[in-house]
Length: 172
Image (cartoon, rainbow, N blue to C red; front, side, top):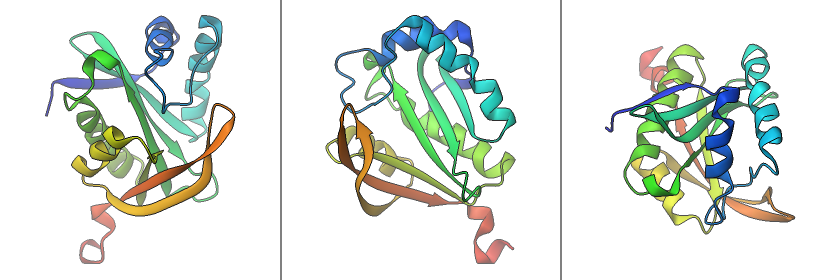
């Protein structure tokens, strides 16, 4: 596992996130802030979202440098399920940082939040993210058709999942 850490996102992270998210090679990630002000406003809402158990959003940090972000978004209708979403700066792609970040985030989700199920979804053409899910021990469930909006288009996603091992029948 790489030497990364997670910390809650802050408004001061806006410039770095703005740069990462607006990379033209980020073709499968829908969050593209139009302005730095938009990114600052989005980041300022993270505290309220944590307090309301909506989402837990982290900066992925390597040697004091932000290299990406990861979030746990709680399903508001089924609060025992959450989706993990992540992004890594292009210069750090393919180095195992997303797998390490998922491991840290899922530990918090299962152990601290007591969630039962975590899901990872990705565009059907995003083979790199599919490999990340597989390397992280997530199981393939299938294709979710037209459930994700990317730019102005509804696209299909692969759905991967992992159940909380503490909730298995042998651990109750």
